[in-house]
Length: 248
Image 1: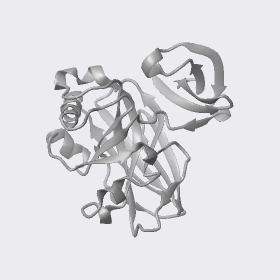
Image 2: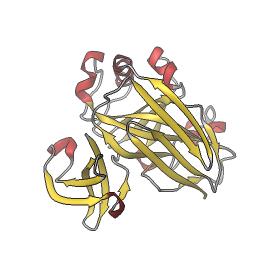
Image 3: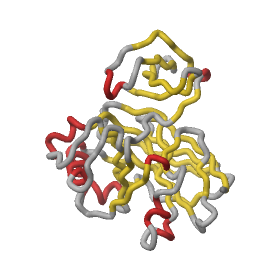
Image 4: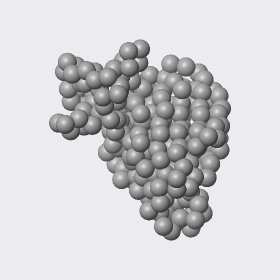
């Protein structure tokens, strides 16, 4: 099931995406807490504006290791935090701070946590995962060692969306990055046991709250972005996440 969050007149509302017909079926309440109850409201794809499908209760947790390194060495470290104020949704501009001399973008697979938890054994991780989403991990790498808050935590540095996929039903992900007319792609092998080991390792360090998001590591080497760029990061099995880049 793919869950989106729509900007409607009555405020943001969750909806189920009917992929085949490209329609959004609005649901009552928050599906993480209230289950799935359709309201009867249905919108076509071109009738709605998507916002970030989840606002973390407290944080986004990332790693300076890439995806393959995290999956082979889940306790390798290099963790950093992005506050929930860094999160934006599709089509919202990434704003380059005035103090940043260089900013990069990299696609990530994000794990959305469903309930409060800590020290979760790997064989119980599936019980605390609500779903998966696409994340554009934006950073200012020149500050990675001197000031991680500058490097990873600035406003708009964590676009995510367009939906949360509540099931990862494949062992391969097809990943794309398009910046203006330049396209890079990769096929990434996914092992749910490795993901479970990584989430378990993160839960040994941080108490996790509903809506917190764990980034599994860069799926493609980070690419420099500058004002005027149009950036799309995509995981074919989940969706495309587009964000323009502007100067502060």
